[in-house]
Structures are given as structure tokens and as C-alpha cells.
Amino acid sequence: VTIEQNLVITAGNDVSFNAAVSGEAGTETLRVNATNDLTFGSTVDDLAALTANVAGVTRFDGNLSNIGTLTTNAAGSTVVNAAVIGVTDATFNDSVTFEDNLVITAGNDVTFDAAVSGDAGTETLTVNAANDLTFGSTIDDLASLAANVTGVTRFDGNLSNIGTLTTDAAGSTVISAAAIGATTVTFGDDVTLEANLAITATSDVEFAGSLAGQIGSESLTIGTSGTLGVTGVVSQLGTFQISSAADVTFDSSVTVTTFTQQAGTGTTTFDALTADSISITTSDLVLNGAVEASVNALDITVDTIAIGDTITADAGINLQTATSTQGIELGGATDTGTNFTLTEAELQFLSSTGVVTIGSASYTGDMTLNALDISSETYDLKLEGGA
Image (cartoon, rainbow, N blue to C red; front, side, top):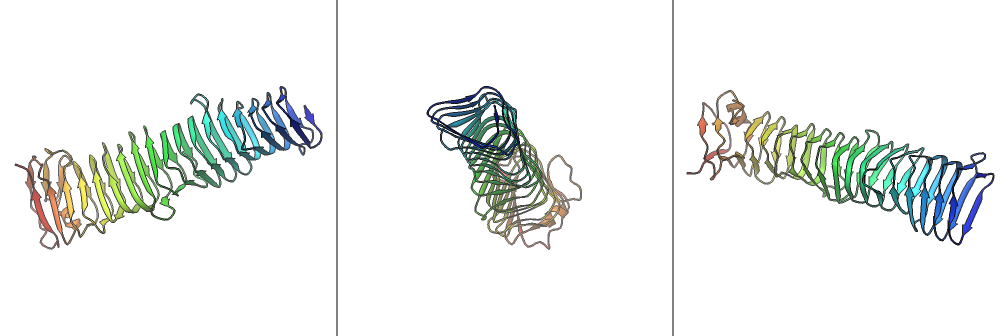
């Protein structure tokens, strides 16, 4: 079918195009109003606008190219079995199901106002947009979701059963969702949270840009079996909680109200950390920059620790081993690298007007004291062990 002028089709039941549809000059528009289904069984090309106002199912079984504005209405649903959609703007107001791997390339915006899902969970969605990409509702059952967007990528609904979630370095990402469930999560751009968010991943989670809350009360909880990496500055979050992870790396400063790491199987590394409350439990800990717990005591439970700058908590500092039998070595000039070791210089990095407690009532390992001078420090040192 070739359309030579703007066309409106109104049908009391179905409309089906079994072969290719195109505009003659590329300036034509097509609007279909149907009380049941609309099917495009082949390609659709060279239309200034394509609008589907359909109460049933709108199906695209062929690629779309050189479309100005693509719009579906809120009624009904859309099924896409195409591999490529090329548009200026695309707005899907109804729920969309993908039956094939799809790449959308847009010269401006792409908007999904309702739920988005894969049909079998093996489908992939890649969106390349010169402006904004908005997901207004939930996203489920995709093997991968990639957003290559110059403007803002918005997630306003929860994501679940996503294989690989990726945003590129251009633009920024805004998340108003409560939950993201994926295998791997990589945000290549700056991320702003507008709501409390929990990310659950079975592999790595990476923030290549900055990470912040919109108003400062938002919380972020991350649980992963893989690594967690944050390259940019973390700021303006109420709570940052790591429920599980392997290696954790913060390459820039972290400033939040509450920071908690509940578990870790690798090395957690900080550039700098400031919070009212700080509690860290992991295997190994590296503190390259200054750490300050400004209100409550600082609690650290690890098997090895390396301190490279001032650690401040006037309410007290509690340091204990994650393994009750792990050896503790205090003082001297050398870190053996095998035990929970604080050299004389590292003990002098500790700053508190309260008590620094090393060990715990349940500690049953060996504690070794080497030469040290902390007479100039303002804190009281308490060494604690079990029977």
C-alpha cells in the first residue's frame, strides 16, 4: 500500500495490512481508528506520522523506517515483532510486548507510558535517542535493556527479570522506581534517585558517573553476588546500604546520612566517606581517604584493614574482626598483610574524644602488641577479648 495523501481509517472491527506500507513522498500521515485490532504484517516506511487509536492489539511484524511521529493510544496493547524502528519521536501509550530483539533509533524522544515486557524473556531492547527516553511504568522479562540517550533516561516503574541493564555515558539517568532486579547493572552516566531504591543483582553493579538523591532523603540498597563499583561522587542520600557484595570500590567521595555495609566477601575500598552513622562489615577494608562518623560511633567488622588518612568519630570507634579467631596486631611500622593489623601510624590516624575499642567480647584470637606511641591521641584505647 502506498499512501499519497494524509489518510484516516475508521473501522468498526479490524484493520490489517499484510504487505508493505509506505508514504509516497514521506510527508503523508496515517491514522487508524479501530475498535478491535490493527496489524502491520510487513514494513512501514516514509510517513510523517503514524497514529494507532486501537481498542485491541496493534501489531508491528515488520521494520519501521523514516517515520516522523509514531503514536499508539492508551487503550489496547502493542506487540512488536520487528527488529528495527526508525523514527523522530515514538510514544507508546499502551503496554508493549516485544517478540523479537528490537533496536529503536529516534531523532528526538522515545516514551513508553505503560508496561514494557519481553514475550519469552530472551528478547533485547536497545534505544538510541538524540533526546530523552522515558519508561513510565514497569519493565519485565528482557535479556538486555540498553539506553543510549543524549538527554535523560527515566525509569518510573520497577524493573524485574532483566538480564543486562545498561545506560551509556552521555546524558543522565533519573530513577523513580522502587526496585531493579537484573543480572548485571551498568549506569554509564550520572544517576539521580527520586525515590527509595533497592537493586538486586546476581553479577556486577557499576555506577560510572555520580550518584545522588534528589532531595537528600532517598535511600539506596544494593545486594549483589558480584562486585559493586562507583566511580563518581556519591552525595545527598539518606541511607546507602550494601546488603551483600564481593569487592566494593568507591573511587570518589561518599557523603550520606547513614552508610551501612552488612556483608562482603571481598575488599571494600573508599576514597573518602562522611556520614552521621557508619557501620561496615566485610572481609577486607581499605580506607584511602578521610572517614568521619559525625554523630554516632563508627563500627567496623573486618579481617584485614588498611588506613591511609584520618578516621574521626567522637562518639567512639569500634574495630573488631569478622572472624573471631583472626589474629590482631597493634603497633609497629609494618603491616603483615595477613592479620587484622593496625600499625603505629594507623593508630595515630584514629581521632575520637571517646573510646576506641579493638576486639570484642566474643573475640578468641591472638592479640599482639608491638611498639607504639599514642600518648598524643585524645581517645582512650580499650582492648577487648573473650575468655
